[in-house]
Image (cartoon, rainbow, N blue to C red; front, side):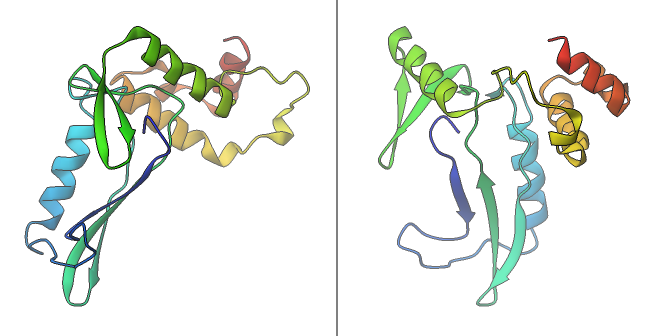
Length: 157
């Protein structure tokens, strides 16, 4: 998430060979994965991911799409950056600042667009936005707001 996102396939070897995961444990692997990425003591800020279990060549595979993120994420309070096939610990404040700057230039979440109206927004995404907020902060106040209230608050941030 600190780079460009990607895909994880549990049950597929690095060379592309499909080995599969035990089909009886696939659901518990997914629950464990979701619990891990939703735990702020492990991944912070937490992320909302939806692993998919499917069958390929009579073997069970779990696919997890990892979208790129506008945030800099930590794993057990350590910042990692992806370089080739390696995860590199980032300790330098300069390098961490570079990550924030790189993400700021790519994502528009923190920019103000003065001429955008409600008609320009995808209001169907508000339930997902609420869920992401609750995943990050358990008792997030957006959970109980109506769509109109949420949009009013968003304009005052």
